[in-house]
Length: 55
Image (cartoon, rainbow, N blue to C red; front, side):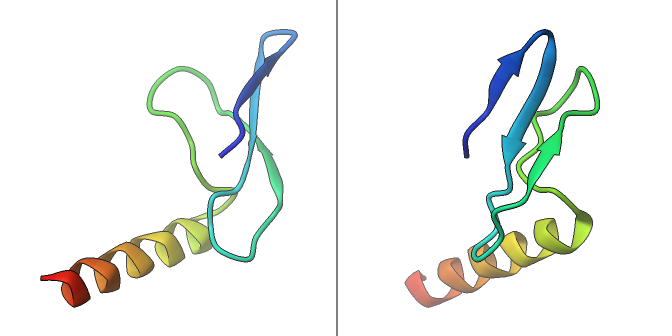
């Protein structure tokens, strides 16, 4: 993920596989990794399946 600070506004590129959308951070707190809830769910599913295959 590519996070940067540009004139005080946090932005980044979505970390979901196949998605390259950019997003603006919503403020202080946990760092965003995704542009939407759909992409966040996609990442959680990929990570869950990876863990199940490994263990």
